[in-house]
Each structure stands twice: as C-alpha cells, then as structure tokens.
View 1 (cartoon, rainbow, N blue to C red):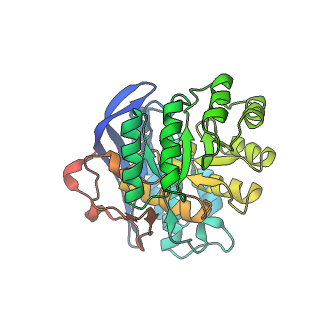
View 2 (view 1 turned 135 degrees about the horizontal axis):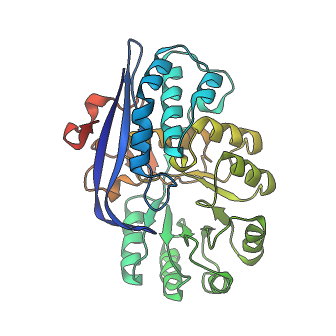
View 3 (view 1 turned 45 degrees about the horizontal axis):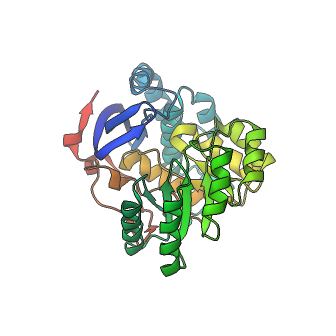
Length: 353
C-alpha cells in the first residue's frame, strides 16, 4: 500500500538561492509496503534550482497514488518501470528509486546493469565551504581538514586574490589537500583570466560552472581559457543532454544531482553507454533528507568515480534531520547494509498527506 508523508528540515542558517533565502527544506516521502517489501523514496524539488515546485509535485503525486499502488504491487521489469515513469524530475527520481529497491528486494536484479553491481565501498566525500570572508574561509577549511576531509569545495562569486592567498597558505601546510571552486555561473572571461593568474600552482581539481555552459561554444571557451579542468553541473538539462556532453567531452568533469535529473535508470544507462569507466563523474546531493541522501550515496558507489570525493556531506546544513546520526567519518562514507525504514524516522517531523 502507498502512503505519502510531508517533511520540513530546518536549516542551521538560511539557504541562499536565486529565488531568495529559504529557512527550511521540504519534501515528500513515498512509503510502499506489501508482503515482500517495506521501503521509502523521496521527491523533493529544490527551490531556486528545480524546474518544478513543491506544490506541483505534491499535487502530481496525489493524483498518481492509486495507479502507482497498483503498479508496484504487480510484477514488473526495468522496461515496464521505464514505461511507467513520467512527470517532473523529482517524481521520476522517486519512482525509479522505488522500482530499484523493489526489484532488489524481490531478487530480480538483471546481470550487467550498473545499478545492480557490487557496490564500491567506501565512498569518498568532500566538505563544502560557502562564500565567506578570508578569515572565516580559512577557519572552516582547517576545521574540515581536522575532521579528516581531503577534498574541499569552496563557493566563490569571484576569483578573489585574498581567497587565493588563504588557499596557498593552507596548501603550504597540507600537501594532500584538494580544492574545488564553485562559481555558480557568476564569473565571466575576465574573471577566469584573474583566476588563472591568482590561483596558479594550487591543487585545484576543477572549477565548477565558471559561467553559463549551456552551449558547446561556451564549454569550448571555458576549456580554452581555464588553466584548470572544467566541471559542469546545473547546466545539464536531462539525460539526453548528459549523453551528448559525455560523447563530445570525454575529459569534462560531470557533476550529477540525481534529484534534478530524474530517472536514475536513464542516468546510469547513459553513463554506461558513454563513460563506462565512470571517470570524472561526481554524484552530489540536492539537500535531500536522509531518505533521498541514502539513495544518492548508493548511486555514488554504483555510478560515480570511486577515486573522487562526492557531494554527500549535506546533513550538517540542517539543525535536525528525519534520521539522526552521520555515516561519514574522516571524509569517508560507509554505506549502510539496509535501506531506511519508516519506523526509523523521527515521526514528529512527518505529516501524513
């Protein structure tokens, strides 16, 4: 039987988006239980980033309830599931996650499919530092290094020479540190030139979305201009676009937010077709609850580059999550043996709808 639950997770500090600051994260959990399985999946569009709204996702799911219940109770293959999955990206993510878990519980895993291969353990995880003044940035990076993280992602609206000086100082004392810079499309060509000059000789793994990379010529220009590798994230529109990028740019770092792209079978099969080695593929959260994050962590193990750190350390952004505890230790996440069940959740944070 299908049931839906709404949650709200309060942020430690307001989360800044293009649509304004938000003080809490909300989403919908789908619970399915029958004689074989007892599982959860999540649909949670992120305001300011997702194309759909929480209200529209909630309405769509409620209208789908009876049909979804009947489908999941029956016997189905991956092909049947692919035909059934539709709707906004976050709903596609949730439906494919439900199907993935049910197929595994019922023992119908197809040989050779990337989602049903032995999981790579452990999963490396990066820490993230927001855009701050140099002193705060230094303190936060040193704290992350003390906690065992080796890869640090830093959000920066400009290639500030003061930030470069902080990173040079930290690198001088920590030779195994790796930096990632996330510009969130806020730079331009001139800023990229400054970046090349001021951040020279630093261990920067890549620069993420220096500016909008929607067209090939924009990606080509970034490749030509940047002294460091380029990563593409929010510019990836869907699985078809992902395939085109993988085919044309074999050295491009690909950052995949599964909740934003949708159907996890389409994502995994696209990667298998164009980059079966999964090299330079980073899987990252869209600030989901522990339920969605658990699935995304398993995807990082299945279809991510196991030599790279993945963006999974997002629980720290919430004052409270629906499941307590943190599976990350010294920058490494060990996947739990079992999926999260409904009775493990903090019921005070859930409202049945």
